[in-house]
Length: 72
Image (cartoon, rainbow, N blue to C red):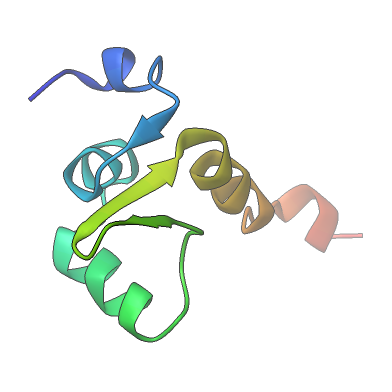
């Protein structure tokens, strides 16, 4: 497995790579796809799934909780 720094240079990631970057379990990613939640993804053929790195990072940033904004 590549290190996270190398993964962040790739435009598309498989589910194991997304799990390494985000710290989420592969089973969680699979469950979220089944429930039509989670990160946007591409289905290639019948079984291959790829996530666009920028989509994953954007989705994570959109869920950011900032205590500075909440205290106003």
